[in-house]
Image (cartoon, rainbow, N blue to C red; front, side):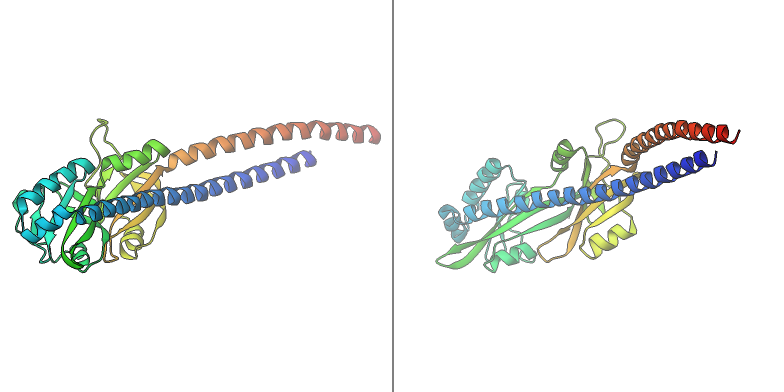
Length: 304
């Protein structure tokens, strides 16, 4: 009896220990994977920056563009810009002269003649340096987050203007990650969700415009410009999430990327592992009882 009880206790303690360890290891592995996936989103944005900068440089070196900027020919620049936007499927394209005056902007012609000389990205380009940045602007309902790149326009070695091209980081961007990994993903302008894979009960509406109020996330990602991985609440549902900052041309965190999964997914997987552990434990316990019974019977027979 003592042997059986001791065996039972040993098996139960072992099962509980390994089950707890399995859950902890699964959680840690999940957080590492989430950090990896949120970095993949960041790498995708870096790729967008490189592509946009290349497109901007090609346009800035176009002899027709250079001549039209020098002549302040808005009509020619407008036609070239419209063709470029359609060909590259960009959502933003602006051509400015060396004073920062807008000479072409296909998406919003009413802005022609206005100035963007105070924008950091334009300043970089007019200073002779190509650069890329994350831009957050206020939309009708939610912030609009985009990637923009600027390239200087030169004539005889002198900077005479700049081309700024951009594309939105929208729902299609995060949908791609979910299709590949099954994880939920979101983009934030500051701490406001602007694009997401999270949909409402109707299966169509997106949960955008929601504030991320987790103190540690805001402090580390937006305040310090560092990554965060841990337990968070998303729409009042416990999640494991990974966050990464979106950095503008001045090195400031102006938004965030998020990748996550409901905690229940991990717990369900852990529950199956624990169930298997206890089944094996019970089986081994049954096997141990029979030899114990034989030993006890032998001892009793010897005493008799």
